[in-house]
Image (tube, rainbow over all chains, first blue to last red; front, side):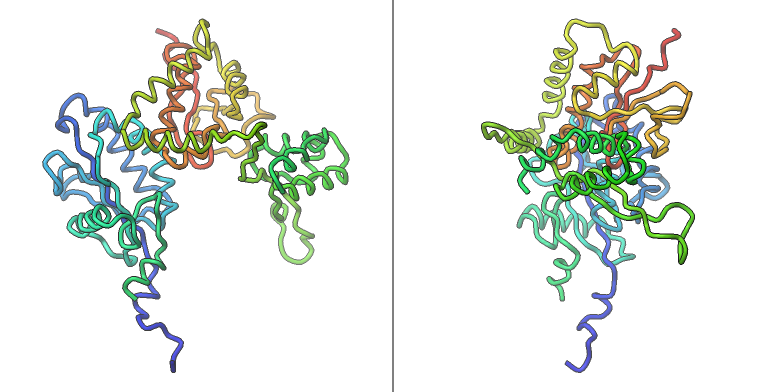
Length: 167
Length: 237
């Protein structure tokens, strides 16, 4: 070694950010009155996300304020794709903000998933994952279980562990 | 130190008063303030606060008093907060936590949130007995304190306001809401938040009633119970 620089400086110098995909299968069409309480929560909860500490980005459909119109994983499956500075920021928003009220009532609106429906993975800072990338990570989690490439809250891996895969 | 030894440290009445005072503030407490709160001399308070820290019941840090820094600002003051670690002793040995974690994990997998909420609501109602819904926020404070929630009143229009001082002294305004510093289900609530926080809200709805003068509502925030109890707004119709 003639240099102390890492082999992949661009990769190693870049701070990582945490991406998150969640799928939710609607029990009724989104304009059904039984889903209305969920729809009413969309704007305030999305606004809370946008203002939450550590929030970086979330997917929205062009011309709207949310992603509920996008159905890349099935006609009745809504997706939630976002990027956060770290695991703690996402956890605090998901479970220690107005978002928890929507989570509490999930069984009134969404079908229970037998397979994993939430996946987390590290992305380079500034990267905006697309739906294809996100669904690929979820497929990886479902096929192989939690790993540095695709994991969950209960089985989190660090950005360092994820880097060691590609480094 | 084993849990039983840590708990035994609280047998000393001065130590226990100091511990309870620090815990009730929900923020860092200096030696002078703790001494005043427990009505003992500062040097005695300092000694016992450090014993509580050694036992792992409190955590200590140092903080410069407001507005002063650099040379001449003096030494930073020592401050204390409750340690995050849980201590419990059961004789004979019991392990309800493992049972709770396994049951919660199974309930999460099975998606039986609504059945759990219903069971919790019924338990809350049973705890209330045949009585009417909780009459006011003072009574709600008593009920919540008895169940370990460590409630404190919040005053003013904005129940979400993070005033940081717990609002429990020097304010003449009537409380408009009650928040809780402690989650009695903390360990399982951290692992299965929607499931267990939903259970907790249903339990409190059963305990306080949903059609009386006070109402429990989910309003999660970092570091506290996810529920706020408010005076109902629809008393005038």
